[in-house]
Image (tube, rainbow over all chains, first blue to last red; front, side, top):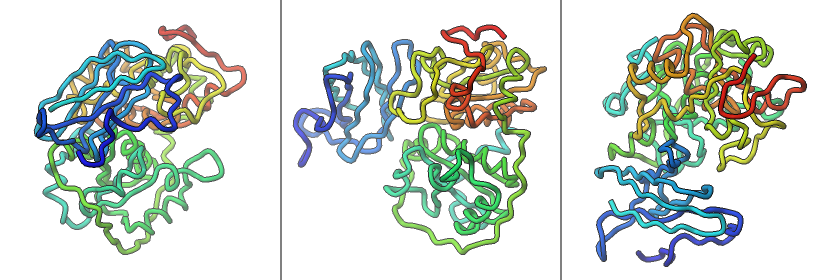
Length: 102
Length: 282
C-alpha cells in the first residue's frame, strides 16, 4: 500500500532491547489484492487464553503490543469476517512481525 | 435492576438516533477515539478532565457535575445511553457515576463502540450541538461507593472482588503493562478478596455474557449471596464494570465500588496485604 512502511511499523523511539514487541498488519484478502483493514480489533490472549489487551488497528491496518516473553494468541475481529486466531512467540529484545489475513 | 433496564442493543441505538430525550454519550479510555469518529449525535465525556477533580484525587463534586451536564445539554429527564471502547470499560465507570449522582434513566449500549464497528454501523466526525440545560444532581448515593475504612473492615466478612489481571492480583505487576502510571507503593491484594478479572464478564465482541454464565463466574469463586460486596481494581474503573454486572445485571444487593482501589489501599500504612494467587486469610 502506498505510504506503508515495508517490514511493518516504524520502531523509532522504542527501546526494542527492553521490550517484547508483537506488531503487524491486518489485511483483507491475500496476495497482491490484499488491502489493509482499519478499525479491526486485535486482542492479545495469554497462554491460558485469558484476555490481556486489545487494540483497534490504525488507518493502515497496523497494531502493536508490548508483551512479555512466551506464547501469545492474537485474536482478530473485523466487520464481515470470522475471528482469526494466530499463535505468536514474543521475546524481550526482538520484534515479532505478524501479518493477519481475514 | 435487570438487563432490560440497564442495557440497550446497538440495533436499538440505531433505531433511536432521532428519538427526542435520548442522549448518546461516548466515554473512552482512548479519549481521542471520539474525535476520529462517533455515533451520530453522540457527545463526549473525557474521564480524565470532565469526571475527575483536577486538584484533589476525587470525582468532580455535585456542583461540578451539574455544571458539566448543563453545559453539554443533558437534562434530568433524558435517557442517557453510554458507550465506549474496551468492552465499555470507561462507559461503565460513567454509568456508575451517573447512578452515584442519581440520574433517573441511564443505560449502556451492549458491546460498546467495538460492537457498533463490528456491525459495520456508521460513525461520523460531525460534532452535534445541544442547547445548554439546567441539570440538577442528587447528593452522592454512597450506598454504591466504598471508602478505604470499609474495605479494611470487610476483610473476612464481605465479598471482596478484585477485578484486576491475575498478575496484578498476585503482586507480580503494579499496573497493566500498557498503563504504567498510577501505581501504589506496594503490590498484592486485600486479604480474602477473590480474583475475577473484569474481562471475564464480556464476550469477544464486547457484549456482556448471559446471566447464567455470569452467575456461574461468581459462584465458581465462592461468592456468598448473603453478604454485602465491594468490587475493586487499581483506580476504580474496571471495577465499575464488575459493579454493573453484579448489581445491575445480576441484581445482587448492597454492592459497592471502591474507587480508591489498589492505588489507595496499596499505599496505606499498616493495612494487611496478601501476596500470591490465593486470597489469603483475615
